[in-house]
Image 1 (cartoon, rainbow, N blue to C red):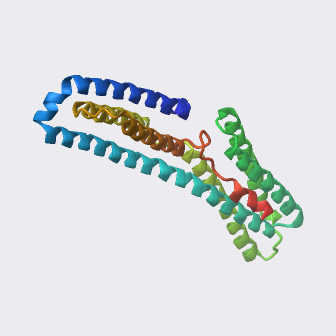
Image 2: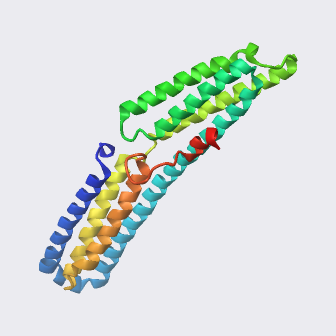
Image 3: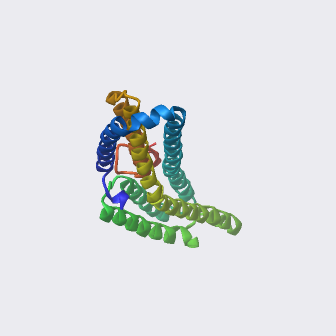
Amino acid sequence: MLYDIPTPILVIALLLGMVAVVEGGLRIGQRYGRDPWSKAREIHTALTAAALALMGLMLAFTFNLSAGRYDIRKNLVVSEATAIQSVRTGLDFLAPEPRARGLNLLHYYNGKRIAYMKVGRNAARETEAIQQSRALFGELWRVTAASGNYAATEPQLRAAQYAELTGAMLDLNRVAREREEARYRTVPQAVIAMLFALAVGAGGVLSYMSGATGHPDRLPTYAFLALVCLVIYLIIDFDRPRRGLLQFDAAPLERVFTG
C-alpha cells in the first residue's frame, strides 16, 4: 500500500503529521510538563535522548537496507551489460549468416533491456519490455543452440565453442531474471511504517520537553524534523527505483554496441 503512494505525498503527509504533533507537544509541555520536568529533570532528559537515539538507529538501519538494495540493482545493470558483451563475443563462433542474425537479435534484445530501465512507473510497458526481451532471447537461443550454425568443422573445437556460447547465454538469462526480481526487493512496508511512527513519536517527545523546559523554540525543532523528513525521502527514493529523483544510468548497456 505504501509503495503505491507517490514519495512526495508520503513525506509531506509525514511532515504535516509531525508539525501537528510538535505543536500539540509544545502546548502540552507548557501546560502540564513544567512541574514533572522540574522534579525529574535527569529522567526526562534521558528519555528524550533515548527516543532520539532510537529514531536515529532506525533511520540508519532503514537507510542501510534501502541503499544496499539500490546498489544491488545498479550492479546488476553492469553484470547484464557484461553478460551481453560475452554473448556478443561468442557469436563470432557462428558461421557468417547465423552470426549476422544473432547479432541483430542481440542488438534488439539489448534495446529492450534499456527500454526496461526507462519505462518509469508504467507497469504495462514494463511487462511488455520484459516479454519482448524474453521472446528475443528465445529466438537467439535457437540460433546459438543449433550446432549446425557453428563455423568450426573440427568436432572438439565446435563442442568447446558450443559450450562457451550456450553457457554465456544461460548466464545472460540468469542475470536478466535476477535484475527483474531485484526490482521488487524493497524494504518491508512494516519497517517504513515503524520509521514513520518513530519519527512522529520522537518529534512529540522533543517538542514536549521543549515546552516543559520553558524554551519552546520552534526553529531548531522544525529544522531537525525537516532533516529527518529529507533522510526518509532518500530512503524511500533509494527503495523505489524509477519513481523518484534517483535513476539508474543505462550507459553500461548503451556502450555494448557503441563502445
